[in-house]
Image (tube, rainbow, N blue to C red):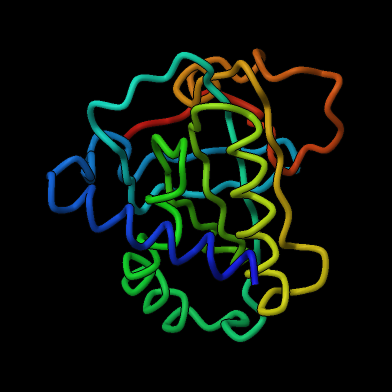
Length: 181
């Protein structure tokens, strides 16, 4: 199975990143609020980044899902936010990964990842794998992704108007710049 091989490769590469201390958890965005074009708002509860990784072909990637089993139970969502760090090996070792903001909407139970990736093809490949993994466990239609080549994550966060109008859907688009605590 190609997906299994990709995730296994990510776990191996993640081990190398951890061993070389190149995987970090920056704190500057923790607690920040993001308001999306669909009217929802979410907060950043974790960040993961690779250090010493140049990005000459930046790509913004946004992934969204709502896990069906969690329903609207706050205690289950709180537990998921704590344990989701265990999922880091499933993405951080994918070729081209640079950063991820882990985002949760307490009101709706929708989770998003806002990533920066090196290269649109690599971001798209990862997104297809991750959405394929999440879809069976998510409410119908909530596991989806958007890839925007040529846009850095931090530029998107500070200047949402840089997101191209040619891409449909407001679920991934920011309505206003990030609000840091």
